Image (cartoon, rainbow, N blue to C red):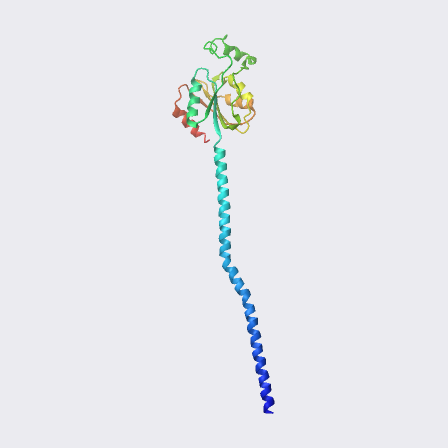
Length: 235
């Protein structure tokens, strides 16, 4: 009987040891996912850093593109177109070119106006005849086109005032060109008359472009006066 009990106890002991071994193996297998989860958790800051770096690079690239676009949009060229009968408008045009760094283009009639032609007090003078007969105001020009016209974003147009309108040689240039996409600023020279509707009339002739309100200058206007006006435009 004692032997039987000893045998039974031995069997129970062996079974208990086997069960413990299985539990340890099961416990070890259960710890592996925890280890993988730990590794994954440790990798999150790296992933976040990579994501942050990617976003930073992307934002920097977008900022550069924006800056480049801004520089390009502000880098458009400026043109100063003018007709000057006695030199006063030319002087202001030169001041504008000095302030803006723009290019100059002079409107030149194929038949130059003489001093006698410009005598508006003489009813038989050329300008008086042209004033009385609109059909004679179609003045042929030496040239009404500008090289690389499409490169200019801003166009100043200057002229003397004739009977409260722009001197009509300017009409031919305005009608001959497409001002789409351009900012146009008229300016005039006159001792007595203001700009009046001269700029509005030119805008109607052009039919294109964004025309701003212009400015009238007296003869002999200083560069500082012109500079103050140009800077006030906020271009």
